[in-house]
Image (cartoon, rainbow, N blue to C red; front, side, top):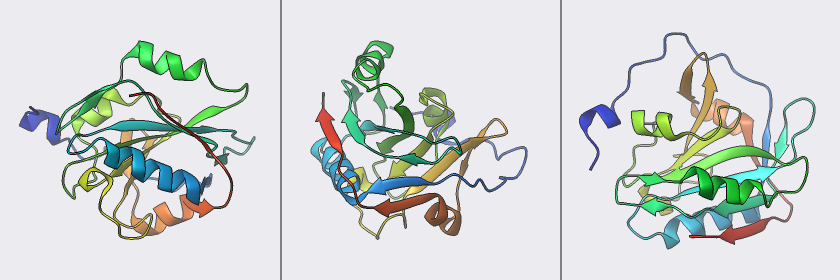
Length: 177
């Protein structure tokens, strides 16, 4: 069970400075993400988006994967070995683009626990409410976070819509849980 310390976190020491890199997410990747999160039932679950990133930092999701993990109603944990298992499957040049997980309720802000278990500070972190069942039209209602100035900043809805864009394309999907 999470403690109060795991849930609340201090405000950022510096304000967020909007970035310019975009993440293109094929509609198929979003559908697969929701299906994987929902498949976990009433447990938090984590997954990752991988794909190529260009010299300007723009990325395109080409792989959605749910690694082996421990899942409970209020958190999840992916071991270093399970993460390595995924990384070794990636084609050359593919990068982590986003770490994705669900929360039990409507709260989509990172917790202290979420901050601690983040696997990469170079990737975005997305939090889907209601174990992936809430549907407000992406990215509305989704917590999209970016690491900046030693803090995971929750992007406001207009910034989130500029940074994460739904498009077309195919993706590979694996559920290793």
